[in-house]
Length: 505
Ligand code: FRU
Image (cartoon, rainbow, N blue to C red):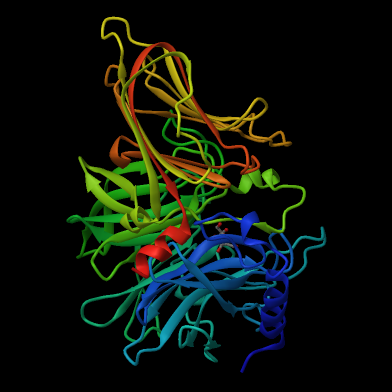
């Protein structure tokens, strides 16, 4: 049975979608079918396709009572919208179907595990705190029925002191023995964050197994959107902390993302942390979630946005929010590395390359332009005894606009700056990132889409992601150097149609 709320949402999105020309959307990054999108949800491989759900408010470009949008893909790049999967239509999730995940049940149905938000009592000052519980819905990959026994994880499943108001974002997986586990974000009595581990024999009945990890006020406060998996012989915990204070160049103010590498103490079922790092050093990256591909790759996708810079939205926006490019994860030298999924290679055409180009001052290269490009830049000093002071690539560039990636080898700092990108808002437009010192040698791969830039530094050791509001017709690329630089450049255009041609032979 489809509720009226879901029926209305599905009807609305089907009609309104027609008014959003594809040319006004990102070319190969997923954007909402209509209205607003935040976190990726239910990222899964089911019945031979990738499924990606997302936090969704179809009725406007602002956050509102959360639905789950839904899209499927064969290659994680060509997405096809399906009807909205969940709407806030029961007493237990009437204030929103918040983030969650998807697993396949033994009987072949797909289980969505999500946070149901229900309205709390109104305080005299007009505020109210909503309660958060974990709920399930079961379906066939298109239509989902909410379980009458919801919620399946309730306040009485919380450890002592755990908040009933900040208790969200279950990420579930299946264990080799056929049972299920999930991690959930929660705020303990110390006011910061903790990750709870729950176990279930069937996906419907859940027991608290352990407090997997505790923040203890070290990195931000509440930890949202956990993910937990094995990778390259280690265990990895991803969290998205709220209310961060900066820590050197590693963590910045506001919402952030952290990747912990460690091991799982199976006696205590506690995560033993060995290393932590920012997952992205740019402006717009949050709430990532991963999927294990059939060929064994751990692929992560994030919401390419920042809660504190929503004002970047165009005044004429017909959609808001987009996902990052899916990224393959690996652990190298004790760090998490990210690299654009290899499926992206099929979208490439128009190869142009240059070697040993000397840059001193400004340089524009024939054939190097575009806003849907895959561009690799390899730098080294033109004179080893007199290393250049600063190098920059400007893209989305004309006389008036540009967004810059600059690198200062003496400080070893790479910066993204979109101050001149056409933004009309007084929000953060820059972020800096400390990269390993190598005497002016640096390489980075830039994936540009119509409204974004993702920079993968040194084979994916660090990434820098930002949305870029500049009109996509502004497509100049310029290289600038203060001092002598030698650079190699490789460029491809990226086009979804190209991928279709390849797929159709
Ligand atoms: C993170 C988040 C989640 C929550 C969702 C609500 O961006 O705050 O914790 O489930 O967004 O839309």
